[in-house]
Image 1 (tube, rainbow, N blue to C red):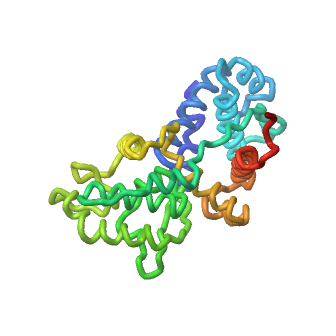
Image 2 (spheres, helix red, strand yellow):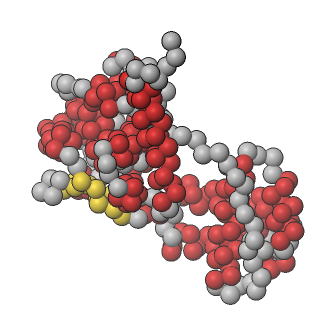
Length: 292
């Protein structure tokens, strides 16, 4: 069986119509290759039992299995929508229940410590501008590192972001972040360019786009210098942004829009974080919260 032929139209759809990233497309392709290698038949012959047997055969954690299920659902929905099959074998297939992990966030005091940077050179101004922008606007790390200089509008104090699936959203930038971005772009970014020509906003020491690993290294180093001994991830500032907005009365739907979440359920995880923080504050502060 020619697997490439089985998924050719779908790959073109993902590339041309959905404009997904190469990494996402490769993940879809790997999952579909795995499935068709297992069933060893064309998509028109696949039935519900084939799918169930395949899912059962996967020796993975529930989250990874659910990724395969989503891949197959999207693939067969595409075929059905384009009248390429009459019966959708994924119609009644449900994902596995997984325990949602609570994202790690920093307290507002820790955020103040982390952002308490007095920059004196190009790298420090870059770092200060990056962290202020992330906490100001709740960007994903990939969104932050893909920004171009022209994505910052200083007249309107906004940043134009291209998120998952190349979907565009506009986010406000607070005055502190705007101030440091302006200084970085106009006074220091040219130093990092190394005589190269590009529009990338945040540059590494070679005048190229900063990597996720590079950003994470910078974040951990600054946290260590500030005495923040908590486990961090590149998403920590985004999670903290959403949680702190919620703590200060922001509407959940507004936070969903700001984060670029398609589903409100994804955003609701921050209500659990917020509730946990309130409970912790209560237990620390209330005189009768602990038994003597």
